[in-house]
Length: 628
Image 1 (cartoon, rainbow, N blue to C red):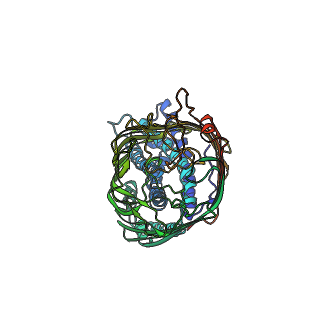
Image 2 (cartoon, rainbow, N blue to C red):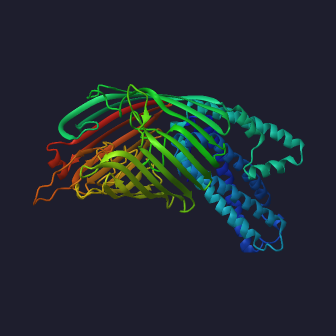
């Protein structure tokens, strides 16, 4: 039984309209089911290949062809115009939900054409097409199954993201497009009423996914200048390990983090976008003087970029200026939006996108936060990359591959010798669904190069398997996960084996306390996600952390070493860091307001007991945010 959508909870007129059309599709799919059963019964009695005009459901099939070629294609175009751009803009994730849904739209259009052609051949009883009825049955079954799965994905994923992502400007733009769309369709219907050849033309245009009069009107109503922003307030409390410091018994700190963002987006033409975004981040009551750049940066430019890209989001494109870089799960490259000052890059980025793949080529330098001065990148600290994402290589999944090159001047090697660093990384990421309930993620990366005079040889991997239990009211998703990253076996042999996690978004990937990063670690994770209500989700996780090499350090989520044991001859160093339990709750409130709260406690293992006697790590937070 399909999941019902409560459209009264929708945050936009667009979701309400699309949910209504989804219900209409389900009614037509039920009608299609009846026709298929009648045709299958006719096939058994020998009438399926006889006089098709007398076969039950002939007129209904013609109506279904009209509905799919016009109404369903019209709906897909509406979604691509109204829903997909804000989601793609906000997530900016290669191979994310928008890319998968767009790919399914192309597949649905192809299936609709096949179904229409099969029905036409069957109705004309082409003598050379003796399997016409079988072609109708086969194409209809494939179309029916993909439509059902696609609608379920949109209602379970896209409808959940829209309330979090749509800004007030997005809602206004969506409403304007819907009004123009409806007016355009009304005008078109009036024209079709008086023009005998109009119906076929519109149907063909919709089947090809072409632009109708309503869509072109919608484009003219879109605002060319939009203002968006964010207000965020978060209280944090830490015990046993202060922000950016080492693990130590008796340490405690509580503080408030504030963040204000304001952005202006201008679109002089459909293919040109100019974005300017400023940010002010402050820390109140933070134990430290001065406050570190990770939590405080008086108003500065966070993004200032120009993007040139086809409005259909296909073909060649370029993005130049200060911008975010987000790829995959952001384990190596991310915007670190959890951080109070977050992360951006001064970069030039070229890309080529098609419905089934996208390739990005970029050169970037991370922006260094300098409170009280203009933020700039550090000369010589660069990152060059090639990132590709490919759909349909895996069934119901995405395959990504990347090659990265990081340079850094004036580093110090294990033997105290200074020099420049050149670290190369190659990796792959696999993500997809094996069934409607079972999904997976796998990522591996290897590194080599030089760090001063040291040789770099390192690697890391991530594997996750998730299962959603259906049908239940809480919609639980159970996950099992394993993470590992290499560590240095000998800190003085001139071989650097500690994996470099580059520029990640690590919060909540290896525990929300952020005690462990993707360096010199093993992490076993067992978790369950629950939907406690229409607007409330919670995630409960258990982690068990181990060091790969006891002669290397324990690295926090930011990559800073926070605990280390010095070897003693004749003794074996322990590697078990500890066990962490996390509870994280997210609540979506009306008027673009969201609330989150979480608590984590790390029970020390033998390594931490020796490295920081008497210490255990606790973390709690509450966060309120408003976006417009």
